Image (cartoon, rainbow, N blue to C red):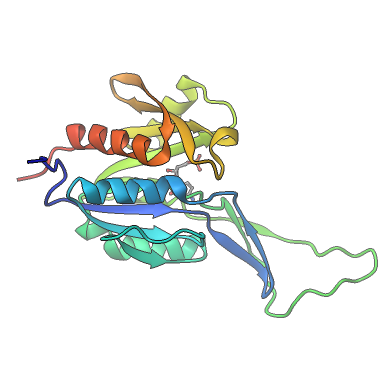
Length: 218
Ligand code: C5P
């Protein structure tokens, strides 16, 4: 008998990049394969949770048993999350959300004009994780920090700024599209090195750590 530490709990996950249109044929996006988020969705399902995966565009198959909600933009991702957040016990934000979207999107394909590159105006996208964490009945929230240099103090500062009990840090240049990753866990107690390995193996470790800390309301 394998005990399932997340049996009966509902997990909402964001994964992948978001795609912000410039015009009907051009987008601004982030380099994210979605592999870490999809591995977490699979691991949470294996551990007994009901899993909803709000995913930006990726080339990945949806893990069996997981419900995928496909989105393109950060605003669509936010709306899809907000529609479901009241039914979630745990929220894991893995998506590489574009920080900005183009305010002056063109409904027509922009034309090349001699020496006249288009001027794009950016507006900030909503911070989905911070918005979820600030809700009165917020689910138990986990954030990710993919940085090019990972400084424990910066990670803890980000965790507190987002208002979340757990932040997982990884080094961006090592993880983009890779099947392996190295992660560190930050919480109120400090930092725990969760080691290196295949993304699914690391995802299982992360889910185990979440299950240990998440106290189900009765
Ligand atoms: O602030 P930064 O983008 O480094 O934070 C990363 C964490 O916040 C990740 O968990 C990411 O999914 C989440 N995030 C979000 N909405 C944004 C930006 C980041 O949910 N607009």
